[in-house]
Length: 612
Image 1 (spheres, rainbow, N blue to C red):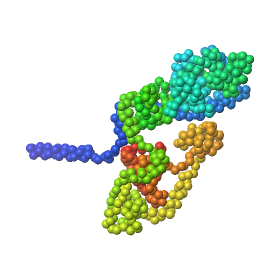
Image 2: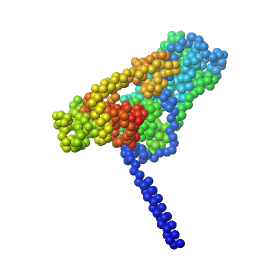
Image 3: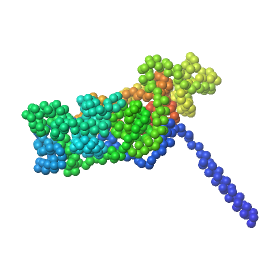
Image 4: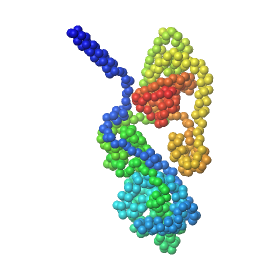
């Protein structure tokens, strides 16, 4: 019995020890150590709240798109108010609705055939545009109403911003009028709006609206009629005064309208038509799109050091485009710091919480980046003509030594260390390709050696033997790369939708196609992309190394590395250029395509597929 008990205890003890060993094996499983960047280390230390940032992508796109602004501006200038528009809106019903609007508005809203034609034109051609504008109005109208209420300006004037800029704070007219309220440079200065290299407060919704409110108040004190105030806002008080004189002293807009500039003749009717569509959108089946971010869901923070939008976006994990939309007055995507002058940054409230909770760490990161900021290589070469020679002297190159073994040749050794034969001969003062057994060869490289198996080396040598075919293939590839990609405009297309479809911008499309406006005709052929030599801005060391490589040596390296399938973990200091150099024949475009990279940014620890 005692022996039996002892055997049970021993077996239990043995099983426990075995379990402990298995557990220990599991615990000590080696995982690859991934170094993280300074940015990631800062962000990992942030205190965060749990609120999710809600951003409506449509709302963001519309704030940067000038399509509606261009369309409405064109309508106001070209609509013929004397031509009847065929649209289902009985005249009697329209008169009834205009009368209802007139009763609760300080504007003198009267029916006339010209106003009916503009309303019907908007209903026929601009329903979709007004649906999108109503989404933007959810963000901007509360700002306007607050400013107008303080100056006792009619709240209905908020609709004037729709006519002026299509609620786009970045809108700029052909004459240079800028912002939501389209102030000219001189007028902006007159109303104390700051305009300098960094800031244009004509694009600031709060300050520009306050200035517009002040202007409206002064003009009303002069004319005593809100329609004439609107006319003076568009064409200037001098033109309104002339029209009054030419009409024989009449002081109602509709009485002097024919004596005003042509654009102003359609300006006030467009304002009243806009007011009508906003008031009766449900009756006409216009369904407003909704902006998820409202003005009351944002807040401002005073910035104590100069910061770029990119730094803020990286730290707060938000797109730069959102910062541009919420802070349109900063022209260069930089929040400047002037001694004694406050500069505010508007952010969603959850991002405000993150910023304020980690303010010291954020400023430390900005200071760190400023200390490590270097001049771009291209600029350095322009500033200093002999910079290239100086840069080459400062290259911090790793020197490796390799002892020649039996069966080795220069081609095999060069392929093993990802260098070319010409450099190998230069480093070792070799006059021929012959190399003695047992000799130590000097090898300079700025990257770790890529040790390849014999099959890969044979493949490399085979490609070198077929250099003519490789060069011909490279020429064909270069020829195809320079071909432009074209697109035929279909029904419902606009520059914004086409740019989004092809991953480009409206500005690029206009430049490629020499367009002066955002209007495009149905069936027009547009160039949507045009390949150009890719310039990768690295630090000065990488660029100097790249300058040593000739076109011939690059083509000789067009090996079968593309046939390999493996993963690469990004290290600190890596770039797409340096990674592509590790794999002969692999280009930056290949890595982008295999890993669905669009902006070229990579981070330490990121796993990249090579020939994925």
